[in-house]
Length: 137
Image (cartoon, rainbow, N blue to C red; front, side):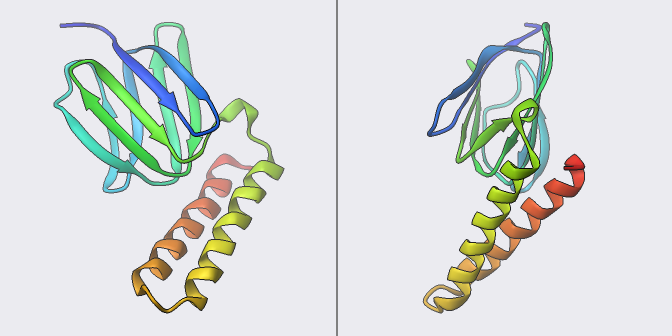
């Protein structure tokens, strides 16, 4: 059994990580999960949260706002809507993400064409605000 697996994290802006990892904690939309080497193949959507990577070189954390994670025999690939290394996060950056979520929520409320969008936007806003509390920013 292998001790590590390939881990890749990319967002539209940049590639954030490509390394060997022993475990990755994923904020899945259906609940948190930890991927490890030899994990069963899985595809999940992400909710806003902290993605934590444990590697032989140490632990790193990233704030993700959503996206997809694919676990396969080759490893784990995360395609994030937005991702920021936690050591680069500032209160101003978090405030910007929260404001984007508020704007999305307001727009969804004003557009009655798809009622489910209002709930999705409200959930995103609540998740983003909770992240600020969790990170003590």
